[in-house]
Image (cartoon, rainbow, N blue to C red):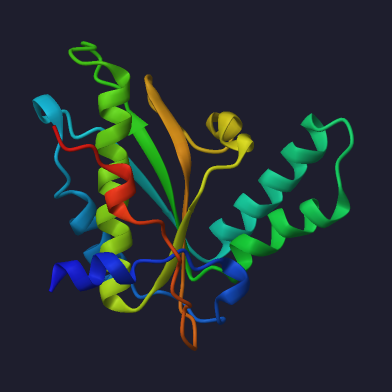
Length: 183
């Protein structure tokens, strides 16, 4: 049941991934799920760029070099993490949002629609037993130097995917009742 998948959804980080690729078939299912997200005025603003193999390594190198270039006091452990995380992933999907050229709706609605597409991806990965998480480092502001982005397109982060072994621990959440006001 969908409620069980929603409750099982977790962030699974690259440090937890085992060194195996994600099949094109599974990536396609995840992207098809993303495409079913709701979208106001049918702008379908989500755009995705799939990185596998050497493309992941190039992303890691780009991020580490950009970090060293832009941070006045770069830390070696962060440089190494920026290089190694993409290598550990079975696949990375760059999450982008294409702004409606007519600006027929507020930008936040297109960002929200893209986030809903990512939630669909996350739920699909959970169902398939693939670990994943959405990373949104400050370095995404420079992704137009890495990707050929269209006019009005911006990168919102990276969806890391990887196979993993073992159990993912449950997450303690506060009660939903404490977050609701009944009127």
